[in-house]
Each structure stands twice: as structure tokens, then as C-alpha cells.
Image (cartoon, rainbow, N blue to C red; front, side, top):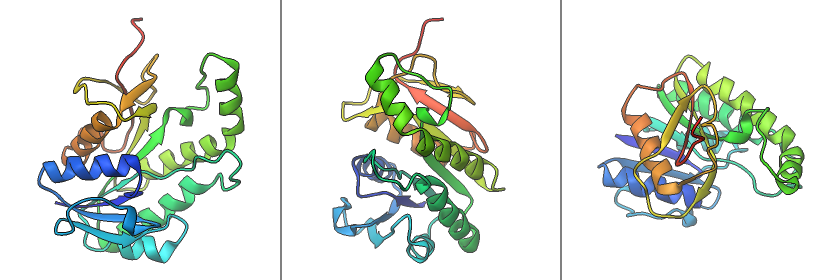
Length: 213
């Protein structure tokens, strides 16, 4: 299978590429700076793909059998809170144009607008990003309601730690008490979602721990 990854130049994109190659897939890597995309050039086609640049996204998806998106912003003062809906509007249009069905969009626990964390610093962080997470929730509705095989995958804090190969999954809500997951475990689950139909049309979350209740 040939899988297009939007956001392939980041840390999560790197893990997704490695996992996909390990499973025998080929990759179209899309990033604002294609030189940042890692992987064997014989198996990883590196293309310009800026989430805000509609033509580059639509053109970049040509030839793909499935799509993974890992897009977002880190700067709290970046006013472009609509990043996720705009990027996925471009992605969904490109998928329909090229006849691509399966999409896994990596979202965040913050997209559950009743999501809270203990501690004043975390509460301030969530408050400052409230419009961004609201846009992310709207993106989830777009992805799962587009008439394609869309899956919105909510992830908690991501770490560059070894895979545990054991994690908790919840449909339609955040994993209760889930706080983190390794990028390697995330990548493995994303590829499972690409290869299997179990979660099509759903919002699903994963974490490597959960509350006992």
C-alpha cells in the first residue's frame, strides 16, 4: 500500500514512516520542508505539502491508497487556530479527487472540550488553546462525517520512549486518566487503523495508562 503522510517531517511523522516501512508499505511524505523527511528515498517519496497550501496538498496526495495526517502548531501565540479544519478540508477534497478512502487524522485529548488536567499551569495552557482545540473537534466531525473511511485518533502527551506494545483504547471518548503514550506505540496503532476497518467513522483515543475505575 502507498500511504501519504501529511506532516511527515516532524517527530511523529518520522515514527509513522518507520512503522509503515517495517510493514512493507511505501510512503508519500508531505511537509513544508521536504528535506526534513527521513527514510529510504527508494521507498519514501518526498513532496512539498503545506497544510495551508491547498494545491500542494491535493497534488501531493496523487497516487496514494490511504492518508495519515499529523498536523498542528506549538506556538501558543500563533493566531491561526483554524489550522486543523483548513488542512483537513484540503485533504478531504484531495482524497475525493483522487479516489482515496482511508484517512487517519491524529487529533488530541484536548479536542474533548470538557477535558481538564490538574494544576494551574495546565489549566492556563488549555484555556489559551481553547479555540485551537475547538477547531480540532470540528476537524474530527469533518473527518468522520465526510462519507469516506475516516478515523479521528485522539492522542495524549507524546514521548520518544520505547514502545510498550500495550495500551488502552476507547471509542468516542478519551481514555479515562490517560496522560501519555510513546510515539512508537501511536505509530503502530495508526498503521493498524490504516490496515483494518475496526474504527472507521469513529473518534477513538489511546493511552498507555488509565484510571482503575
